[in-house]
Length: 304
Ligand SMILES: Nc1nc2c(ncn2[C@@H]2O[C@H](COP(=O)(O)OP(=O)(O)OP(=O)(O)O)[C@@H](O)[C@H]2O)c(=O)[nH]1
Ligand SMILES: [Mg+2]
Image 1 (cartoon, helix red, strand yellow):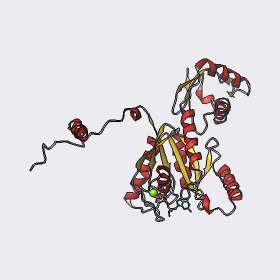
Image 2 (tube, rainbow, N blue to C red):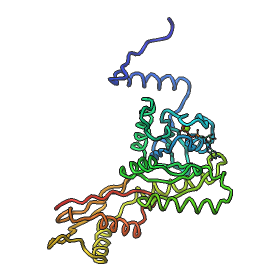
Image 3 (cartoon, rainbow, N blue to C red):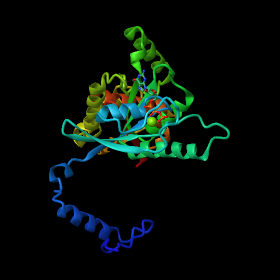
Image 4 (cartoon, rainbow, N blue to C red):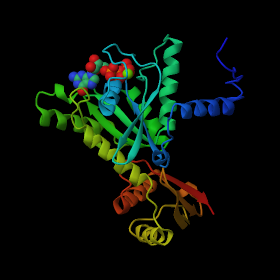
């Protein structure tokens, strides 16, 4: 019929896709398209935008990419699918993943909604940094906390992003009020920066982007082994060592053996001696000494 050769493929079994791809590239070359070499080397930073329905996630992504591509409305549940958009900022490429608002799981909710919750969690999994959007008018719910806990357990960078601050009557007063609520409700998240924005009025968005790049840098930081070793000896001596009966915890060694997320492995005589509070002590000391601002860090204790 004059359409040229059909290309047989199977999406399910990934069959014929190379052929399809090379045909597309050939056709693009016929139209004088060039491959952009320079951008190929830049690794993108995936950022998931999460939060309850109607908190302004799509509005924020639109404001950041400076276009009205995503549908926004005041009907909760407008976004059903996770959609990625790319933004170039200070020589970095940010991949912004707009997600469907995650809400309380009611008794008989549509199946569709359950899928959007799953996609939201998937988006967190695929990301390195999470913008957790909170509607300053609505505040925080227990469902919010579950989702952010999930991000924490998966060792993501987290920015607490308070949106709709244009509705504040007294900016400073309401800001302080909100900071107090956050401190009370989220004691488990002391490292996450809090940024007050207005997606609609495009306020403080630069601060949000700058903090993301900083978190990205800190997630990719690596402490040399001997430096960390000395530091570890120092902090072990500065506080009481955990013990159970006659048994005393001994940390034989500790190293940072991974980045993005920053990962530390400690070899010990008995890991059951590492209590929650001692773990927190080590984490706090690491942060004080090295930073790792805005990101969860992963600490593994292994029996030698
Ligand atoms: N006053 C004010 N309203 C905002 C702001 N950001 C978003 N909104 C409004 O909040 C409503 C919801 O915005 P959306 O961007 O669709 O919210 P969403 O989080 O994507 O919602 P779902 O896709 O349903 O999860 C819209 O009516 C927006 O105009 C803001 O900074 N200030
Ligand atoms: Mg949306």
